[in-house]
Length: 406
Ligand SMILES: Cc1cc2nc3c(=O)[nH]c(=O)nc-3n(C[C@H](O)[C@H](O)[C@H](O)COP(=O)(O)O)c2cc1C
Image (tube, rainbow, N blue to C red):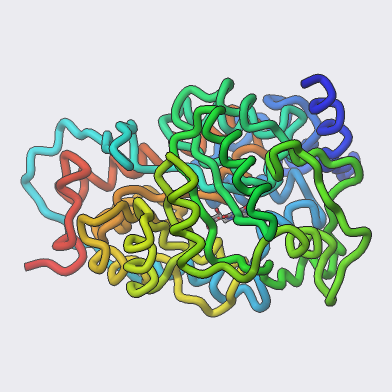
């Protein structure tokens, strides 16, 4: 364990301060440093952050330069990235009135697991590079705030340590490797660690072309320890980029099998005891394939606009998928959720829960563990308010007629 920590510390992204320009309070904020201890990165008294968008811009002030490009970026022209969020603002809510909304309850169940709110944390590769303690602070904060968290295969903290630090369920995001026995060994380890489900990523047979990463020659920091990539944590790293992509993309391509078919999903559900959710589905026919192959459900997602550019906004794809799946499986959605009302819209369109990715990154950059908790509490409070204002006392009462009234 000490060895893991040592390697991880070496791999952390370093940022520099912007120097001492004389300054109104906004520059005080801009001088804050990512490598300062959490709590010292900014002073809420200077300028309280009241929504996720403000966490986003504060995170950019703190991290500066290209540090956040890997996290914030999408593929090609970033059309899908922008559409994910923009599509929510095109959906109109028709509130019900006089529904006695003095008491509201955001509790629900996902895959039969009770959870205090339908807002989960999406797998975000390498988020642990943004904190000296790796993925632990984000996971701990998220589960304390009531989120089910899915850990990315590409994380820097061993899954066993993440589960031990969490205050609630942890799931694991999986890629199937060219070497199936390596995948199977990893799955056994994930099961033994106590994870509750697998999210099998389907939309990344090879990595999308993220031009910010190409421009920055984004590579994995030297000495990176990716302890959940394989059962023994070994990381086969190519020296340089192949085919004009980034070295990170080349590493991905070495490991992950681009030849998967639905038969491989049947293989996965046969070797694992855990429920499998197929992540990265935007078509009803694919959702049906997933359920027929033994998946417990699907995650409607375009990988946060990082894979196929001009793929539909996730929220625009949700309704048809949810209708096709019906009560045969779970339907979760992610991509562009930045407001509690977005969560409500997703549930009205048939999702049982949503996941958020980048907002967790921004919370972590702004204020470490505290920042992640704050972002999730903001979203939960906004969901609660949106429920009150649409006449919903419970998650069950968030129904499709809020979008097109009778
Ligand atoms: C920096 C970053 C890394 C990601 N890494 C993974 C990953 O390893 N596996 C995966 O299935 N999805 C990954 N995703 C996609 C997220 O799980 C999720 O689908 C997406 O972030 C949701 O969109 P949002 O960021 O707008 O909330 C990543 C997203 C980001 C932003």
